Image (cartoon, rainbow, N blue to C red; front, side, top):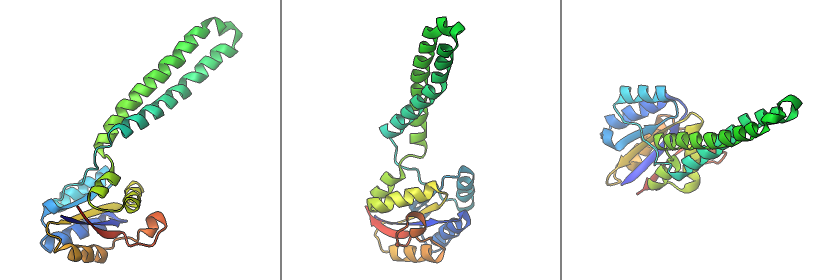
Length: 196
């Protein structure tokens, strides 16, 4: 199966591109889109009948990132409490309580961060991994992912035998696909083909 992907700066352009693709005979099951704004995602899905693409599950990286962020947040919140207890002479007798505060702040922050990291990782997942599965080169997949995170809309059109890929590419370009250099500083058009 061959996939064609493109980035659009406005949800209305992506919606038009999806409608144009469907009008040219592309099945809704072979179309998809991704956007970081859940309200715009819902609007596009309702207006076009096309389901949003979900990134590949983030796996362990989302959990570890969440744990580290939670651990740092717990430390940032509890360490000043311990420092205040230690600095004020009348409260030094409670310094062991301050140590426990730091310990539980770090452990609690890390645990909660891991839970939220796991939930966030399975919600939107890893678009770089998804695009690599579509046959998009790694550097371009990272640029597309950065585009999604910066508010652009990714549109995907799949052609089972590859015979409609050129037509899909042409439709996406005419519908206003942005230049990938606007996203990463390169010079490639933000629509291309990938085989998987």
